[in-house]
Length: 68
Image 1 (cartoon, rainbow, N blue to C red):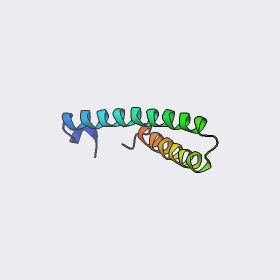
Image 2 (cartoon, helix red, strand yellow):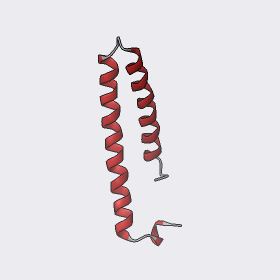
Image 3 (cartoon, rainbow, N blue to C red):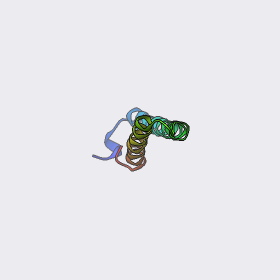
């Protein structure tokens, strides 16, 4: 299925969603990196932040590809 088969409004909304979600991922990664720096003594929080950063980066990579 090509873009020509979709209504113009759908394509615009899809691209807007991808842009919004990409910005959200970048914000989340930056916030998690701050948490990671500030919470060096609490190992469980540090590990959770690392896992969340990896998840957000994977989602960001997916969104930046042409798969969405």
